[in-house]
Length: 333
Image (cartoon, rainbow, N blue to C red; front, side, top):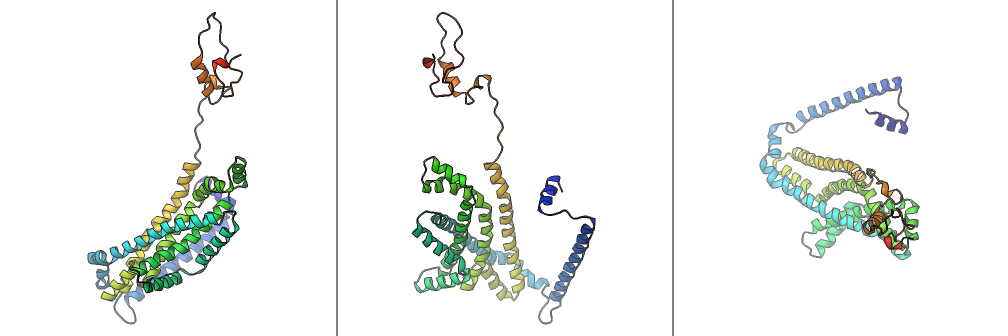
């Protein structure tokens, strides 16, 4: 462990002493032994169930792992899951930015309506939204009613979360941001959209990426309304070969790998954004002629206009208005 990490941890809590470290080590060993015993007990129970076949036998795992299972069930189900997730993510971002902006506008009516919509979408469970939308779309004769019910329900719920992230991100900005923009002549709407919102979006980006994991996992609820996602396809495969435990285990591993990749991306994104938005810049060397004018633009303009004096002598080095925009040889006194 590096000194920086130790210093950071010491700011959060007191570093444990020798006795505390010994107790922690003993507790970790006991917890590890209990975990190993539980795993062994589960494997023994699966290999010798009270009723039914050995769940660890290859005859049950082979149909769940063969190539036909991937081509006919897992990959089509994974595509349907990703298709619903990607569309729901795009819709959630649009929904969240729109209603997050509306909740910050000075108009009381717009703020109130936006608050009601956001709180309603956050309060109603996602599964209930899916069921009601599925029934409404089915009664209206819409094709792929289960797909659109899943997508719209995910947009409503996760979009409301993004809207709150936007609102909290703007609220956490220093008050000087808005005061400075208003002092420069911007309106409140221009300050919100041009100054505050871009900073809030960058600040909320890691939390928004973490919300992608929630979107991906919540698509599994669509199997209840007969949406053919990865979970539904794995259940269909398990019902064919009576190995539902094996097929669900494969689906769980797929979900885990995708969510793990998204979690790593969410951890990498803050450092990447920090390096792009707050990276230190190398100081530029200042030429001697630019001591009184750091930009050196005026002096370069003056130097380009200097002509040799007809009677000799040295020209004036600096113009009286060397800090202004009239840096011209014709304005010298």
